[in-house]
Structure formats: C-alpha cells, structure tokens
Image 1 (cartoon, rainbow, N blue to C red):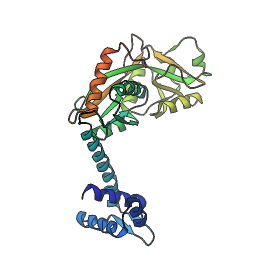
Image 2: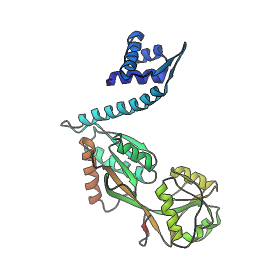
Image 3: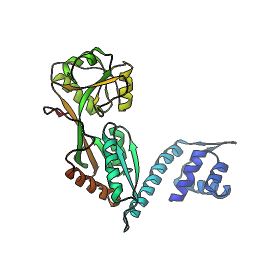
Image 4: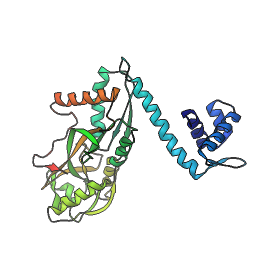
Length: 310
C-alpha cells in the first residue's frame, strides 16, 4: 500500500465510479480496477460493493477513506516542510486559530513576517479549540493560537494577548440602556445566556457566578463569535464571550463584565514531541521577537486592572 495506490482509492471512493475516477486520474480503467483489487487482496478486506451502475463503500472502505485522507494530507505537509529547509525560506505554515482575536493576531504576524519571507505560504484553519488541538496533536497543523487553558504536559506555548469577558446584547435590552460601559456579573443572574461551547469554559463560567452567590441561566452554547453577536442582536439571549471587537454588529452592544472582571488569554502553542521546524520554527521565533519589541499589539483591547484569568 503506497501513496499512489491510496490516491487511486480516494479518487474511486469519492467518484464511486471507476470510469469517472480513471478520467480524473488521467489513466485507463483496467489498471485502476486492478490496483483497487490488489489493494483489497493486500488488506484482506472488501472495500467496495460493486453494483451494476455504481460502487458503494463498505464499512472497511469508509474507515480506509478517512485514514487515507489523513495520510495523504500529512504526506503533502511533510513534503512542504522538507522544501522549507532549503537555502531560501519557502514552504507552507499551517496555523490553527480559535474564534475571537486569534485571527487578528495571526493576520498581524503574517503581514510583518511576509515582508521578510515573501515566498512562504500559509494554510489557515479556524475552528473551536478542541478541534484545533486535535489537528495539532495529529500533526496536521504546525502551530495554533488558542485560549487558555491548555495541556502543559504535551504543549509548549507563549502568551500573545488577552481581552476582557463581556456581555453581548441587543441595544434595545434594558441592561444595554443602563449608563456605563461595564456591567456587574450579578445583573446577569437569571437572564437567558449563551456561552462558549468548550466544556472547560462552561465550568469556569459556573464558578464565576458561584463566586458572587449566583447561578447562570445557560440556555445554549456556540463556538462562533459572529454567530453569538447575531443571536444577541435578535434578542435570543445575552452572550457571554470575550469582547473581541470594540465595535460590534449593528444593533448589538457589548459591556465588559465586572465585579469580578475576568479576561481570556491567547497563547501560541505547538507540540513538545514534534516541535515546529523549517518555516514554522522561523515563524515562531519571529512572533516571539515581535512580541518583545512591540509594547502592545494593535489588536489589544484594554482589560480592567482587577481582572483575573477565566
């Protein structure tokens, strides 16, 4: 089972038709059919149920399709990493990002890094923290920008920024009409709330409310900041999220939560067992120096002095 055979298999599995797959691979059908039959013989399993007009993947075929895609993706990434070890820095850096300010930080770094290394390309993936960490642990991305907490036993990281936790609500909400840019946590007790999906975040929010003798009325969770703002704008619920932007969507107001105030902290992380190499390592070192030189990021939002990490 080599990479070429796996590519043949993936193409057939996606097309579910030998003729179309052969056309896509720019080869004749008999050698392709023979390669798939040889693959089944080598593995000792049936990968396709062969109907009169189309193929159907077996359970073993479904499993091999998932694994083959991962193997081929990792193979491409390894080739790019090796290319980046040449004299001129080239190749591709794969960066995972959570919602919030992470994409803004990454955009700032790439803009500055590209001045020095214009040949480097980027593969950017945006998702919730658990999925991003899964990609990192499987070696499918080089580095990631996530929010604390993270696994210090398997990951190393550097702090890159922080932002206050805020209540996002429609401008028509009575709490939005109250004077001031902050809101005491206690005032959110009993109000329908939407919170981040990450389990550790929900536990931390429960403890946050308990610290003032209250309990949050959480009606749901979501991982996308834009979705949170959109739901808040439609008066679905008040969303407790890091502030991210000073100016929200039209019709939405944000107030920093205080008494007690909390902040989210972003970190750039990588695997301890398989640390960044080539272009990715150069990028990490660049970010480290960039953060030392810059007094503050252009994308930072002021955090109350009394705030603690959530």
